[in-house]
Amino acid sequence: MHKDCKEILVTGEQITKRCQELGAQISKDYEGKEVILVGLLKGSVPFLAELSKYITIDVYFDYMDVSSYDGATSTGNIVVETDLKQSVRGKHILIVEDILDTGRTLATIVPYIRERGAASVEIVTMLFKPERLERSIEAKYIGFNVPNAFVIGFGLDYDQKYRNLPYVGILKEECYQ
Ligand code: 5GP
Image (tube, rainbow, N blue to C red; front, side, top):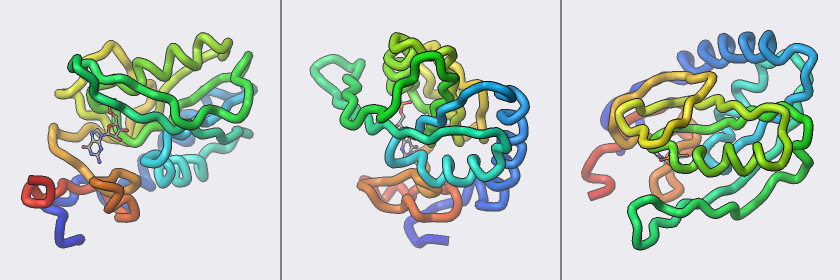
Protein backbone atom coordinates (compact mmCIF):
# COMPACT_ATOMS: atom_id res chain seq x y z
CA MET A 1 0.00 0.00 0.00
CA HIS A 2 1.22 3.57 -0.78
CA LYS A 3 2.63 5.36 2.29
CA ASP A 4 0.11 8.24 1.89
CA CYS A 5 -2.85 5.86 1.89
CA LYS A 6 -4.61 5.32 5.24
CA GLU A 7 -6.80 2.40 4.22
CA ILE A 8 -7.76 0.48 1.09
CA LEU A 9 -11.50 0.74 0.43
CA VAL A 10 -11.79 -1.19 -2.83
CA THR A 11 -9.14 -3.55 -4.22
CA GLY A 12 -8.24 -3.84 -7.89
CA GLU A 13 -9.72 -7.36 -7.91
CA GLN A 14 -13.04 -6.06 -6.57
CA ILE A 15 -13.09 -3.36 -9.26
CA THR A 16 -12.47 -5.93 -12.00
CA LYS A 17 -15.24 -8.19 -10.70
CA ARG A 18 -17.69 -5.28 -10.49
CA CYS A 19 -16.73 -4.14 -14.01
CA GLN A 20 -17.55 -7.65 -15.26
CA GLU A 21 -21.02 -7.40 -13.70
CA LEU A 22 -21.65 -3.85 -14.93
CA GLY A 23 -20.30 -4.64 -18.39
CA ALA A 24 -22.68 -7.60 -18.71
CA GLN A 25 -25.64 -5.49 -17.55
CA ILE A 26 -24.80 -2.60 -19.91
CA SER A 27 -24.37 -5.01 -22.86
CA LYS A 28 -27.83 -6.41 -22.15
CA ASP A 29 -29.54 -3.03 -21.59
CA TYR A 30 -28.09 -1.43 -24.74
CA GLU A 31 -28.33 -4.40 -27.12
CA GLY A 32 -29.09 -3.13 -30.66
CA LYS A 33 -28.45 0.53 -29.73
CA GLU A 34 -25.72 2.93 -30.81
CA VAL A 35 -23.79 3.81 -27.68
CA ILE A 36 -21.10 6.41 -26.98
CA LEU A 37 -19.14 5.99 -23.75
CA VAL A 38 -18.23 9.53 -22.67
CA GLY A 39 -15.30 9.53 -20.24
CA LEU A 40 -14.83 12.61 -18.08
CA LEU A 41 -11.09 13.38 -18.04
CA LYS A 42 -8.87 12.58 -16.38
CA GLY A 43 -10.20 10.53 -13.50
CA SER A 44 -12.48 8.16 -15.41
CA VAL A 45 -9.77 6.75 -17.71
CA PRO A 46 -8.69 3.65 -15.69
CA PHE A 47 -12.32 2.77 -14.89
CA LEU A 48 -13.41 3.28 -18.52
CA ALA A 49 -10.54 1.06 -19.70
CA GLU A 50 -11.46 -1.71 -17.24
CA LEU A 51 -15.24 -1.52 -17.71
CA SER A 52 -15.15 -1.39 -21.50
CA LYS A 53 -13.27 -4.73 -21.65
CA TYR A 54 -16.46 -6.40 -20.41
CA ILE A 55 -18.93 -4.61 -22.70
CA THR A 56 -19.67 -7.05 -25.51
CA ILE A 57 -21.74 -4.78 -27.81
CA ASP A 58 -20.13 -2.24 -30.17
CA VAL A 59 -19.49 1.11 -28.47
CA TYR A 60 -17.75 4.35 -29.41
CA PHE A 61 -15.42 6.26 -27.06
CA ASP A 62 -15.38 10.01 -26.56
CA TYR A 63 -14.11 12.32 -23.81
CA MET A 64 -14.92 15.60 -22.12
CA ASP A 65 -12.70 17.63 -19.85
CA VAL A 66 -14.66 19.76 -17.39
CA SER A 67 -13.38 21.98 -14.59
CA SER A 68 -15.16 23.25 -11.56
CA TYR A 69 -14.47 26.79 -10.46
CA ASP A 70 -15.92 28.00 -7.21
CA GLY A 71 -16.99 31.59 -7.62
CA ALA A 72 -18.46 33.96 -5.08
CA THR A 73 -21.44 31.68 -4.62
CA SER A 74 -21.15 28.22 -3.12
CA THR A 75 -22.74 26.54 -6.14
CA GLY A 76 -19.54 26.31 -8.21
CA ASN A 77 -19.28 26.81 -11.94
CA ILE A 78 -18.64 23.99 -14.36
CA VAL A 79 -16.64 24.92 -17.45
CA VAL A 80 -16.21 22.61 -20.47
CA GLU A 81 -12.49 22.72 -21.30
CA THR A 82 -12.52 20.01 -23.98
CA ASP A 83 -15.71 19.08 -25.75
CA LEU A 84 -16.91 15.91 -27.45
CA LYS A 85 -15.44 15.19 -30.87
CA GLN A 86 -18.51 13.48 -32.34
CA SER A 87 -22.19 14.34 -32.64
CA VAL A 88 -24.45 12.85 -29.97
CA ARG A 89 -27.66 13.38 -32.00
CA GLY A 90 -29.78 10.21 -31.87
CA LYS A 91 -27.08 8.31 -29.94
CA HIS A 92 -27.34 6.68 -26.53
CA ILE A 93 -24.84 8.35 -24.21
CA LEU A 94 -23.34 6.65 -21.21
CA ILE A 95 -21.27 9.11 -19.18
CA VAL A 96 -18.41 7.36 -17.39
CA GLU A 97 -17.37 9.06 -14.14
CA ASP A 98 -14.84 8.21 -11.44
CA ILE A 99 -16.90 9.45 -8.49
CA LEU A 100 -20.31 11.01 -7.98
CA ASP A 101 -19.86 13.36 -5.05
CA THR A 102 -22.05 16.49 -4.80
CA GLY A 103 -23.48 15.88 -8.28
CA ARG A 104 -22.63 19.42 -9.46
CA THR A 105 -20.53 18.25 -12.41
CA LEU A 106 -23.12 15.81 -13.73
CA ALA A 107 -26.03 18.20 -13.06
CA THR A 108 -24.37 20.46 -15.67
CA ILE A 109 -23.12 17.84 -18.12
CA VAL A 110 -26.30 15.72 -18.41
CA PRO A 111 -28.54 18.61 -19.66
CA TYR A 112 -25.66 19.89 -21.84
CA ILE A 113 -25.56 16.54 -23.71
CA ARG A 114 -29.34 16.08 -23.67
CA GLU A 115 -29.90 19.49 -25.32
CA ARG A 116 -27.75 18.37 -28.23
CA GLY A 117 -30.28 15.73 -29.18
CA ALA A 118 -28.96 12.54 -27.57
CA ALA A 119 -31.50 9.69 -27.61
CA SER A 120 -30.72 9.00 -23.94
CA VAL A 121 -28.17 10.08 -21.34
CA GLU A 122 -27.24 7.83 -18.42
CA ILE A 123 -24.37 7.64 -15.95
CA VAL A 124 -22.04 4.87 -14.89
CA THR A 125 -19.86 5.82 -11.93
CA MET A 126 -17.14 3.77 -10.28
CA LEU A 127 -17.87 5.30 -6.86
CA PHE A 128 -20.77 7.09 -5.21
CA LYS A 129 -20.71 9.09 -1.96
CA PRO A 130 -24.41 9.08 -0.97
CA GLU A 131 -23.87 11.37 2.03
CA ARG A 132 -22.58 14.20 -0.15
CA LEU A 133 -25.17 14.32 -2.93
CA GLU A 134 -26.74 17.81 -3.34
CA ARG A 135 -28.36 17.58 -6.76
CA SER A 136 -31.12 15.33 -8.08
CA ILE A 137 -28.75 13.25 -10.14
CA GLU A 138 -29.06 9.51 -10.36
CA ALA A 139 -26.43 7.13 -11.72
CA LYS A 140 -28.00 4.16 -13.50
CA TYR A 141 -24.92 2.05 -12.77
CA ILE A 142 -22.84 2.34 -9.60
CA GLY A 143 -19.66 0.42 -8.86
CA PHE A 144 -19.38 0.96 -5.11
CA ASN A 145 -20.81 3.25 -2.45
CA VAL A 146 -18.07 4.87 -0.37
CA PRO A 147 -18.12 6.84 2.88
CA ASN A 148 -17.59 10.59 3.09
CA ALA A 149 -13.78 10.58 2.97
CA PHE A 150 -11.26 11.87 0.43
CA VAL A 151 -10.39 8.92 -1.76
CA ILE A 152 -7.51 8.39 -4.20
CA GLY A 153 -6.41 5.80 -6.73
CA PHE A 154 -7.76 4.06 -9.84
CA GLY A 155 -7.92 7.45 -11.60
CA LEU A 156 -8.67 9.61 -8.56
CA ASP A 157 -6.01 12.18 -7.66
CA TYR A 158 -4.90 14.65 -5.08
CA ASP A 159 -2.93 17.43 -6.78
CA GLN A 160 -2.66 15.19 -9.88
CA LYS A 161 -0.95 12.42 -7.86
CA TYR A 162 -2.06 8.85 -7.05
CA ARG A 163 -4.13 8.28 -10.24
CA ASN A 164 -2.02 5.21 -11.03
CA LEU A 165 -2.71 3.31 -7.79
CA PRO A 166 -4.37 -0.01 -8.71
CA TYR A 167 -6.94 0.29 -5.86
CA VAL A 168 -9.13 2.95 -4.22
CA GLY A 169 -8.00 4.12 -0.80
CA ILE A 170 -8.44 6.90 1.72
CA LEU A 171 -5.76 9.61 1.64
CA LYS A 172 -4.10 10.30 5.02
CA GLU A 173 -5.29 13.62 6.46
CA GLU A 174 -1.71 14.86 6.96
CA CYS A 175 -1.23 14.78 3.16
CA TYR A 176 -3.73 17.57 2.56
CA GLN A 177 -3.68 19.56 5.78
P1 5GP B 1 -19.14 16.46 -7.96
O1 5GP B 1 -19.37 17.45 -9.07
O2 5GP B 1 -20.01 15.25 -8.01
O3 5GP B 1 -19.13 17.11 -6.60
O4 5GP B 1 -17.63 16.02 -8.08
C1 5GP B 1 -17.15 15.14 -8.97
C2 5GP B 1 -15.66 15.29 -9.10
O5 5GP B 1 -15.04 15.78 -7.89
C3 5GP B 1 -15.03 13.95 -9.37
O6 5GP B 1 -15.00 13.68 -10.75
C4 5GP B 1 -13.65 14.11 -8.78
O7 5GP B 1 -12.79 14.69 -9.72
C5 5GP B 1 -13.84 15.09 -7.63
N1 5GP B 1 -13.96 14.37 -6.33
C6 5GP B 1 -15.05 14.30 -5.54
N2 5GP B 1 -14.81 13.56 -4.44
C7 5GP B 1 -13.52 13.15 -4.53
C8 5GP B 1 -12.68 12.34 -3.70
O8 5GP B 1 -13.02 11.83 -2.63
N3 5GP B 1 -11.42 12.15 -4.15
C9 5GP B 1 -10.95 12.69 -5.31
N4 5GP B 1 -9.68 12.40 -5.65
N5 5GP B 1 -11.72 13.45 -6.12
C10 5GP B 1 -12.99 13.68 -5.73
